[in-house]
Image 1: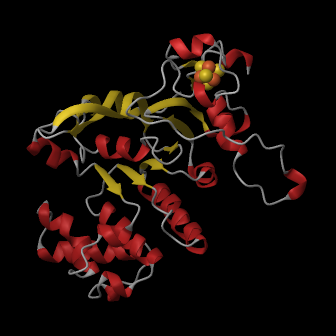
Image 2: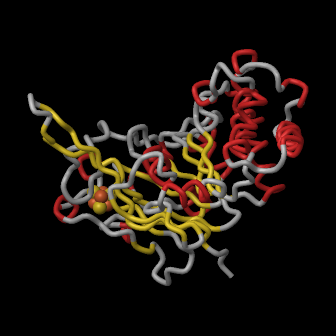
Length: 329
Ligand code: SF4
């Protein structure tokens, strides 16, 4: 039996106006997120990957309403984050939290790390002062930091320790869903593994559901149950991690996987490097936006946007791809 969907993202769009001229009139539109739909199941990790500028961080921020959606829905147990009032959003944010890439800029340098972790509890007025102190101690222990360091300031800690503080702050309100935007990419490789292991352990202990945004395929492979691949504002492939990594059905996913460095020379593949730059989201190519870079492109690719369709004819395993020629791959 399939796990229930905890979050449903439906036809989400985020466009930004491009203004110019003396009167600042709108001249163009950046289509950062374009008609994105997917489900996030309770207790799973969905990895969201794509090159820099593909819209994956904007998608995470728009889901959280840190950016106003242009249109679409983000349903959490039937409540719509995308259209919630300020009061409803305040309540919904207890359940859905975000962890950011750069723990230094997401922590206020003028308040202690103990205050930073306690702040969400104060804002939501949860428990007595003693309850909040106890909760902060518990959170420090949960992320592997000693509660005795609470009086110190962010600059006194390493990047890995600061990200632990960021995670503790994100967990303060006991959320059920975490949107983690590149949470380890600002860290040294040596500490990335420790923070990833911490996220895995917290998910196990607390039953968390993650949307894990990363440009790093090896990190996504390590952590995810399912993977969504984004290209120029759209999801072009989504499915179980095992299916995506073993049998990618979209030429872009294949090119991304082929560009991952392999340390063992005996396992090195014949590389097919990804050609060209990601096109502009202001003037995306017609039809399939990947067609100028795709070795398999044919006439229909330039004229029609491919729909996300099941890779298997029985449609059973939830592996979907948006490619006119997927059954030939
Ligand atoms: Fe390539 Fe065409 Fe498939 Fe797009 S639809 S990925 S251009 S084959």
